[in-house]
Amino acid sequence: MAEAVNTGAPGTAATAQPPGTKRTRVYTQLWFWVLVGIAAGIVVGLVAPGFARDTKWLADTFVQMIKVIVGPVIFCTVVVGIASLGNLARAGGLAARALGYFLVATVVALSLGLLAANVVRPGAGFEGQPTQSQLDAAAKQVQQGAQDSGLVAFLQNDLFPKSFLGPFVDNKVLQVLVLAILTACAVSSLAAPIRTRIVGSIESISKVIFGIIKLIMWAAPVAAFGGMAYTVAVFGSSSLRNLGLLMLTFWVTCAIFVVVVLGAVSAWAGFSVLKLIRLIKDELLIILGTSSSESVLPRLLTKLESAGASRQTVGMVIPTGYSFNLDGTCIYLTLGALFIIQAGNEQLPIGAQIGLALLMVLTSKGAAGITGAGLVTLAASLQAFGGEFFSPEAIAVGIALIIGIDRMMSEGRALTNCIGNAVATLVIARWNGELDRERLKAVLDDPSLVKADMELHHGGGAAAVAAPENDTLPPVPVHDRAPEPAGVASRS
Image (cartoon, rainbow, N blue to C red):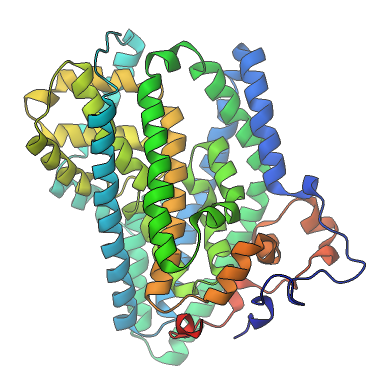
């Protein structure tokens, strides 16, 4: 294998630093400056809330710039991943396993949200009333949700594109994925020489896109500062006391899902979910500051492939997971729905709760990890469910109650979604026989092994520009490596 030199166990020559090599200083790393931005944002939000309320545009602009390249990244990655196989049956098998995993994870997450709501009952005894501004904002969410409800609306508006370029312009992740799969299937049916040239051209375009990402990521610390300052200034006091139990229940439920559910799945696949979280801590910090999991999608693609998952698996599972494997959003949906019922002093029978959860299996798909998407999806789900408990008036009042702390829960949704997709990629790679388990073990024990690949594709702070000779590993491009053989997992 091309990367065999990097798969040795920690402490071997493959991971040891050469004599005289300087260790990379912490202040040259992106995660450090993101952490500084978050801390500075908290301080400014508490000390100067008036100024901090005007900093949200920093995070919004960063996410906006990331969204510009998310569609092209997904398209290029999926096309290259599938077409490079040259075997649609193998690609179809990988997709079927991924969707099967996503379905099970969705059901478990929705069920866990129902269980938490019934045990804790965060809405019971609620006596607060939403403000007029919250009611007005909720009415807009309900109106948007009403337009997006139903199976036919999902197929026409969310799944199937209306033009080839439209999904890229509107940042419709699920529609871009559909276009990418169709394009990949068409390319796979071509003669081998033509297919190779087309795949090579698309891969070259992806390198340019990754270069754009490298430039944008320099603004991540500033975006984290703006997002956190705004959050603390607007939502850091009285509103959190009013709905604190709901927020606490949601975060604890997400933590249980990650540690217990994803931990068990990871253990079955032969790795530790806690070590995986350590590996992707940079990405999680960026999400914490920007409240958007889309902002780290390109970095996840590179990091998980560098950690031992095959290019094909990463290229299929990560983009698909951003629409079909939203574990945090699923927990939020059932928990939020029952909170609205409880806050109105009503009861929803168990049978109706199960029916609502089954409906949300569908409505949760296509809700990309953008701030506020979960709130719109919740409104759409309640509209589609209908009934006496979820009249338009009740939905408007319920959404108005939640809207004040939605951003705080949006960060929990994005973090859980990101961890869930990272776990799914490695598990499905193991399941499909396309995981280099020796490489993964070495990377999880020593995350610095992926540093060279990350700096090459995304930059890593000053060290990536000023002192590349300090890298402990040669900068081998991740996307230039040969595809993993199907039997890699059986070696260990």
